[in-house]
Picture 1 (cartoon, rainbow, N blue to C red):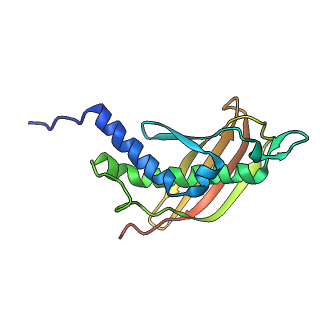
Picture 2 (picture 1 turned 180 degrees about the vertical axis):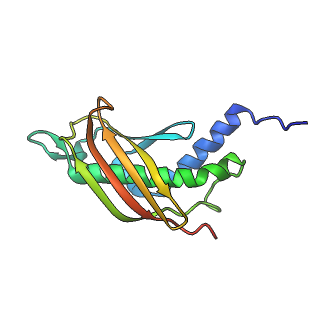
Length: 164
């Protein structure tokens, strides 16, 4: 007889707790005010508008450093989320006792396509390649219209050892 699937609320709670555990391990995410919206295995990073993230008050425009940090955080969390997904779906609770180490940035290149406006920003990362030692990720950032990116980035990361 087939095992009954877990109730959907249990699955959602486990996924949300694992995501919160990942995000809480990087204090800078909280400083920038970045939050992650989760729909199944897909994450969207959201950086709500904050006056402190404005670099040029004359335009006004988002600071390039805040934009780059936002995109890099989206890439790192996406990579970690992808590494966590299989264990989490197997019913394993991801907490501080068995948390996966975060990838380390090798390089990160940002293309600033237009000025970031003084409003909420969104980013979605896509893992292009992920091996045992190395990963490549592409990130797109937009504000009002997903088809009009204001920045995009490509990063390469050193993957943590999974041999605890």
